[in-house]
Amino acid sequence: MTAALAAASVAVPAVGAPAPDFELVNQYGEPVRLSAFRGQNVVLVFYPFAFSGICTGELCEIRDNLALFEDENAVVLAVSVDSKFTLRAYAQREGYTFDLLADFWPHGAAASLYGVFDPESGMALRGTFIIDAGGTIRYTVVNPRGQARDLGEYRKALAGLDKA
Image (cartoon, rainbow, N blue to C red; front, side):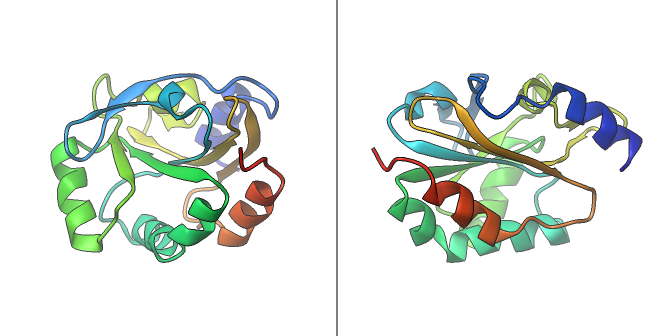
C-alpha cells in the first residue's frame, strides 16, 4: 500500500455513512449535484486522468456494460481532476454517454471529500462508491495505483440494493 493510499483510506467515508454531497460540472459544463440523484442508486467512480490507459479501459468497460447499471436503477458518475474541456474530448473519443465530472477547481475538492485525492501527485485515486437511493454509501473500495477495478464487484454490490 502506497503512502498516498494509506493516508487517503483514513478519510474514506464508511459504508453506512451519508454520501458527502458535491456539485461539479460535467463534460458539457452543466452543473451536476450528487444529491439530485436521490431516488436512484449512484455508482461514483473517481479515476486519475482522462486518456490514460487503465482509466480508459475501466470506463470503456462501464460504457460497454451500461445496461447492467441501468437495470439496477443506477446512474454512473465518473470524476477526475481534468477540466471539462478535456473530459468533453475524452467522452467524444470514447463514446461515453454517462457524466464525466470535472473536479478541476478547487482542484480535487470532491475527491478530497471522499478521501481519494492524492495531493502529492495532484490526482484522484481509483475510488469507487456505490450510493443507494437514499444517499447512503453501501459499497466502497480504493484500488492501489495501477490496479483496475473489477466490473463483477459492481454487479455484486448493485444486486443488493433496492431498485426503487
